[in-house]
Image (cartoon, rainbow, N blue to C red; front, side, top):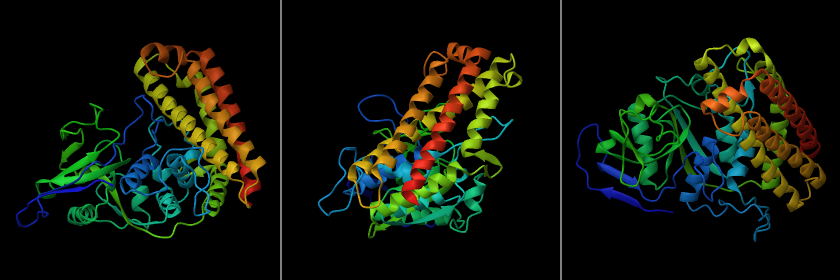
Length: 398
């Protein structure tokens, strides 16, 4: 755990005291940029992993081969993989025919809008509070009774309270879309937030963003850009991991078989709609800007499926290695194999455009009729693998 850095403040009405409060050495969250660390491109589980790592949680880390602990409970060494599975985001899939807009914000991904946050935190034994900003466009979170609304004063108060306790705050937004990042501090009596965002390096999203010497963002007028905050309480007793995973598998099976999520197709139906959208020539006019925008939406979905299912394979295979009395190792390994195959199929999809990436040449190659039909066939293979994985998990979860 890092340290708290305080600068002496003055008692001014409407301002936090001290004027500046920063938690030092909060781990950065960012989209994968290469190097030795595995990709962590799905924001909520990555932000949770970083926050718990800062808090010194002994069960947070990256060692996919460690499946037992001295206390007798099973551990999964890759905590990011675990958070993906318990949140349900490892199994995400949405598509709405005719709609090419970004729609993968977390509250849409499961039947319970705040389920991905609640389930992941409860699995780790942490109490938490969600406070939503009614002035932002994140309606699914606001509709939940689990997310009471707060004004800017309430946000400032909760953030300061958490930071004084030495705990980073998860913020949805501040920079970019309402996705999870970390607030590590504030300055100028709370007028400026300091922290890490996955989107702070994107020029189209960081207008007006300044930076600390260590690279953290500094954002003024942050409240209108922040859809919600999640503050963590003390860690309590952590439920047995075998029970946590069994419940996560039940939710995964239901999610894969859920066709309607807030007006979007979900699960297996979403895969089929995605395949149909790719192979329908009417969706791919000559207009280069339209083709690029639609290919970008497709690319984002490919990446989400590839990463989510790969880490599901990691976590589920580790569970099989633990051989606890509830698990059926052969069924878990079969499910993990299905998810690993889905990961490979997404790389094959990228291969239809000459590889991963979205430069002009890849967009042109990936949107030819021949490439799109091959992509559609691969997506249907992935759909079938998803269905098979759910059957194996169902045999484990009951």
